[in-house]
Image (cartoon, rainbow, N blue to C red; front, side):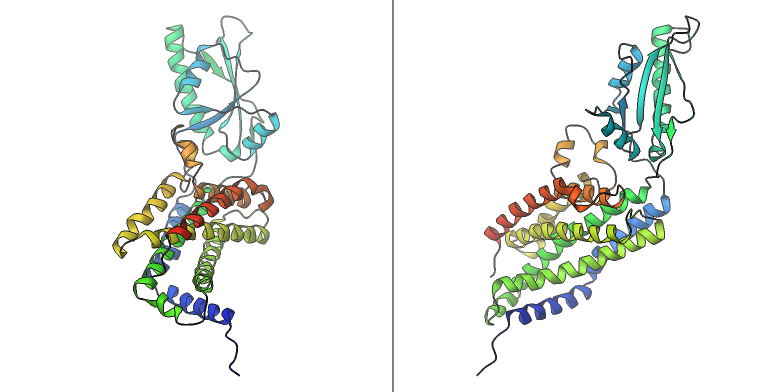
Length: 372
């Protein structure tokens, strides 16, 4: 009696062969390893760095908002005033370095000989790359207001800072922002370009058709190819995270627990992005149309999903578009887990949006994917 055909063994054989083929592909190695590592090395050696010209600040509840200086601050295009319903939320954002600081302007009660207003400002060392520049901008605004309102009188408001106004907290390094973005883009590129080229070539070279001559099911063919790509990209993610951590002190708040949670997020993101690759491989008419189609998915996310700098630096009308993109939510979840100490259970919003993207894109992939 002939031995029963094993779907699992056939799938694993496809996985093994595809996995070897990935490592033999120069483009897979370049885009999977070299491309993101080049950016990590560059930004790792640069260090520091400002994320952009827009400064997010909060206004203290005791701030006088009826003066010319406050009006000028509120109208300045480089300043974004953020409001919070609870004080605890404000303090959390301040400690995490998401605000340049908290501003308070008050009337001077010491008489007419003094400047009419006093400026109080508090921040944390987590925003050390921004609050000095913000204070310089505030000084320029103050000088313009002084000249416009007081004429020859030199100072409209005087900055008063005391010990403790700059709170010492954990530093947020440039690599802590850059590395998750580069890892996310690596997963996006591999998921879209890798899957699109592989399945288009398998269809064009009639390899898929030959698979049909065997007893293996279609679903196991997809699983075999998919598992090999997942394995390769998880190895890439491990290499990127280890180099970032040991060479450039990329923050892993909870050590190996954080590392494992980042790998889980990488797996979720890769599965979603592979759906885009299946769509491209099904829609493409020939191999030359794959790059333009794939870039329709990858390029906007590369530029708008917070890969290199916060999306808060974009114009306000563009930010809602940025927040819809799946890579934005993957990047946010990775940064929250790596630096802020969040766990996967705290990233339910980002994971939920990624899940919605996954459902939508695979529903489309099922409709457009071609086997022959």
